Length: 102
Image (cartoon, rainbow, N blue to C red; front, top):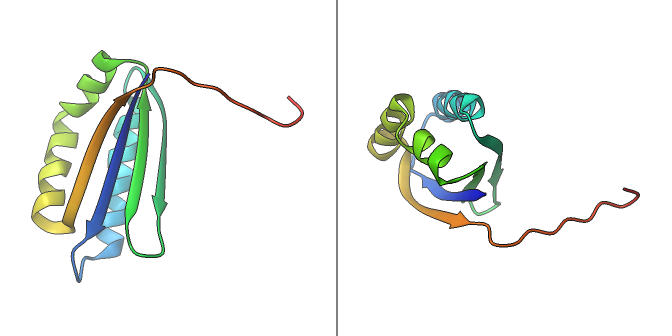
């Protein structure tokens, strides 16, 4: 499994409604990609945002990375929305789970 951790901060004065609509569009594309597993999005009290996206393998992640709409959204993010961001691509080497009552 491949995991992308996208951390970002917004520019001053960004239209949150426009940004939110764009994020929902990008997430919808990801969810339709073959090999997509799940996505979660968080916002910290200090304004940092974190999105965690999981794909089955490197090939399916590459298809998402090079998706035409995703590429346009990346450019828009740099041009209009983000004051900074970082991206980490990680390969899961071990996973364990716990669920009470399962």
